[in-house]
Amino acid sequence: MSPRSVRLIALRVIRQLRRDRRTVAMIFVVPIVMVVLLGFMLRAGEDKLTLLIAADDPAAQPIATLAAATLQSADLPSAIQIEPTESDAGYQRLRDGDAEGMLLLRPGADPRLVLEGTRAPATEALTRFAGQAALLLRATTAGPLPAGGPSPEIEREFIRAGPELDLVDGIAPAFITFFAYFFVFLLTSVAFLRERQQGTLERLMITPIRRLEIISGYMLGFGFFALLQAFVVVTVTILALQIHIFGNLLWVFLAVVLVTLGAVNLGILCSTFARNELQVVQFIPLVIVPQALLSGTFLPLGGMPDWIIWLSRAMPMTYAVEAVKAVMVGGSGISDLVVWRGMLALVLFAIFFILVSARTLRRA
Image (cartoon, rainbow, N blue to C red; front, side):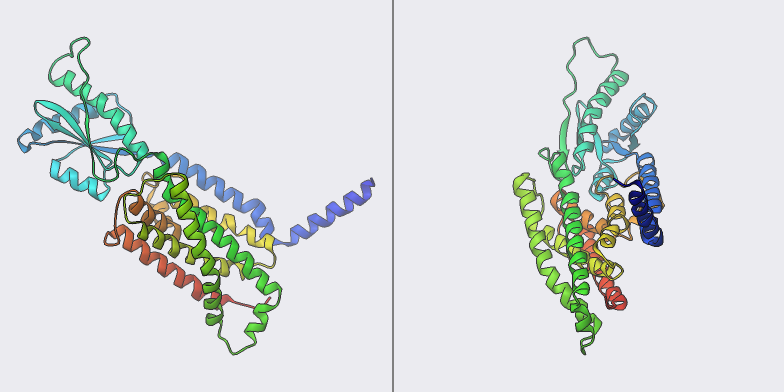
């Protein structure tokens, strides 16, 4: 082996990569941004759980207020935030998703734990905490518990979902959305790039067909396979993993179809800026990874700063994850705000991407 030949080849590769500003940015800038963003989210995103304290009898509300103050002053997990409230207002906050649980005090009986129910880890954590809180309240309000005395039996009530909801049920909507979006984007961007490289797109552009018509035609063609993939991803995930569905499956398919159509248009848009398949792959950490991080797919957004929440609102996957999760886990329908707002946002994103794609379309 000739060291001189190896050195010359290595120098040629270095010079070639140095001239490619996009590759240099991918090597240095993008990893720094991703690591900093992920680290910030992990540290700032401590998921706070809100447990409301109320009494089922309005006349006993002072007892609930005193119980909340007792729990707030006790040495309890910092991730659980205690707030006193009235029972009717507490039920409304649970339905609105503003709290994860409510400990309903009942004079002469053990308390009832009312749970929002769509997050299995939160349900498990609040169930454990409710038992500890009930013991503490009995010890402070009725004197020391007798040795070997029975522990309070916490009755659970679910606003949404139910006790059968597990961790896989909770994360399945996010994973369905992410994998459908990711693979459709990759398929479309690579396939459209090959159309340009083979000269098909150039031949179309010299015809009287307008750019918007070209993009729309490609969207329908790629969209057909996107629809098939969406059907396969949703069906296999539900059947193979035995996912519990608490809403209408039709709205799940519709949300996944809309987000995949947006992925088709985004793939066409990104491929117009790529000259080869390597450059197409370079768009994944630029347009897919940030959406996965900021959409709640892997990390909940509840404890994130406002600027991260606003940034996530500029990404289509956020609306898709929210809509699919609201239907599959929360039992919501198209009339619910989170579902129809998510559907509308996905349609607008798809239209925006197709218009920008037609504007930036160029020959190979």
